Image (cartoon, helix red, strand yellow):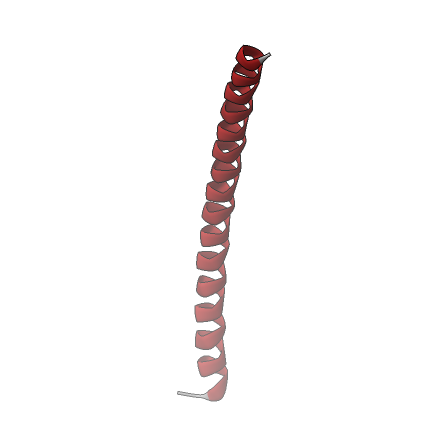
Length: 58
């Protein structure tokens, strides 16, 4: 196989790998956003419960 064909093959493989990594990155970003939302939801629930407890103590 000539050198140019080898380079083209390697280049094509790198493009496929880049595409895979971009897809994985998008998936991980979506997971991160979901986790942030869950954390914020839990924090809000905890703050609500704390304010209820503080209200009963006053």
